[in-house]
Image 1 (cartoon, helix red, strand yellow):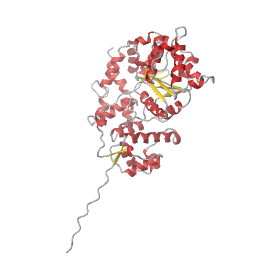
Image 2 (image 1 turned 180 degrees about the horizontal axis):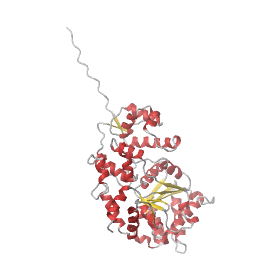
Image 3 (image 1 turned 60 degrees about the horizontal axis):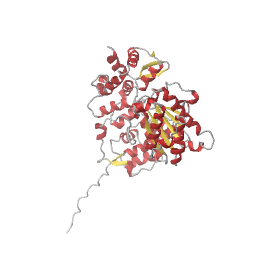
Image 4 (image 1 turned 90 degrees about the vertical axis):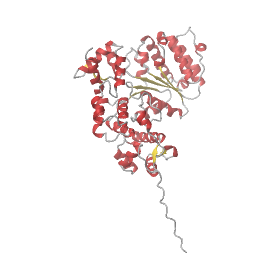
Length: 445
């Protein structure tokens, strides 16, 4: 009697995997380090990555899009090419991976530290991090609004916390108007906020003596309390320092004090080592338009970082992350529309990823009030109308066929809002979206 063998079951094909957010961030950071060291800070093209990883450009595009599953060996090869080891936290099963956040949530403001939509702009990230590792460092980050300043700071502070640094970020826009009524009130608020952010009790009353000046009292508070109490280096990030520019009577003393702190770490005296623990980040959207003595200004000391707009290559890379394919032919048009502003690019790509609007529709309707940019444009107009002198200045800019000259303070304020591009002394709209919208909105004013 013979028995037939049961039919052989086909081997189950191993399900593919997709880069997790953590894996994508690790890979981006490693690529950034490599471009700084070996490619003069210029992002690698897909062909250059292919030569380095021995993976085809199409395979690399699938990995980077984080939409199409690949096998584990592919990810291992990619990671190994940048001296990384693939771990289970670096990928997720394709069956369980969800990308609903791409379609349903429009990102705005500071991006989460693990966001896959953060665009690295080498060598800026590495420069910022390396600068703050130096004793008594001062880093100045300048760019118009919605260019990614706070997102850059958040990522840098995360890296530094991993090195046992104490970090705190304080937005000076959070201060009530009453705080700016006099220097004493402002500096006491400043001391109290920094203490609270660092987990220290408020000891302002104990260290404040009206016999001495306010800047001295604030300096004494940091020197004999904050810097003494905390053992590790402290990174103090001050966001929206432009808020102080509106109050010259405070700005002169406050910024002069910050410059003095920077210098204290270089005196070589008994207190220098203490002040070397403090590293400062000043984040602002515009040029400094308050009169400051050159030797008392923190804005001509330390490291200066200006965030550039996105390039066409970066727009295409970001489009892949949003799952927007075949954008090569329109990348330049989107760049001209948005001026490479990261927020404006993200808004456009988000709506393209929902497939509820085409590229042609996006480009044709962008400057209208009911477009995907409608809320943003109306908010800009509403904010601008509070400053009649800026309305008049912007009207001149958008209605002119050539760059124009403006009063420096007007130019700087419009630049801080991201509305114009300044190439001293000439001013032009920062992008076609703003030129077209404000041509229509201001033509009757």
